[in-house]
Length: 329
Image 1: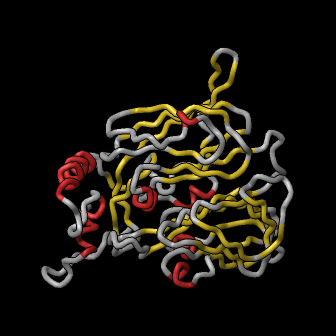
Image 2: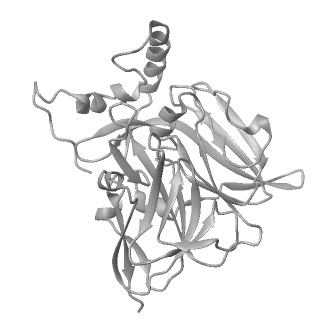
């Protein structure tokens, strides 16, 4: 990916340069901060700076990359174990804008974790992110596994629970301010399959996220699977007449809702993925923050077909892509 252009010495020393230097990623703003917060934030930011590495996201790989963990057996019961680490990474969003992301396993979104309903799940969470973080899972579990207690930098904790109910869920950091921790990249999808499974399909994941690049409480850029406009220039290949099972999640902070729309087709909707039969058929669906569904469809004709939110401002700021429907051979 190309490096951002070098700034002029005067006029271009702006928020873009602060993003490049990582100041916006430390949790320190330049105005409106009280003295009682300055020293803890600066101390935390110094820890975070020591671990920052540049990463290059691969949204094409993220589409079909499911993390099933490692199966172990303890006391006669199978445990599905996952290793997750919170780190800080410089993320190049486009040729002009970069930011310091807070993320899980060097990815935005984090890995798509997958288990089967009823399995025992164990998540070993290692926090090397400089700030206190956590992992809160949507679903049903005991209070001690709820992930709302801060895990300090350099510490490790274990979340363990039975995977239930089946459906499309998510995980995210739950440390205040939650909007900041999520908007900087600490989120991912958590799929729990029904015990009987689902019919064969081409399964793909799209996670809608937003980026507040100047810390003003508004998103300047949006993306599917981490990088703005990636699928606009790299269409998603699917086969003509192939059933596609799309796991869709809206985790855009600062915007109350976002829609998802596909061109020239309709999809079957499985709300929150918690049904084995569709509830409706439509070509656009509205989701609040953290809302998610399974959408199933197939394209009868080859060609390129656009998908995007139907809020044009969100679509035009990076949340835009194409399906490339390949003809049957």
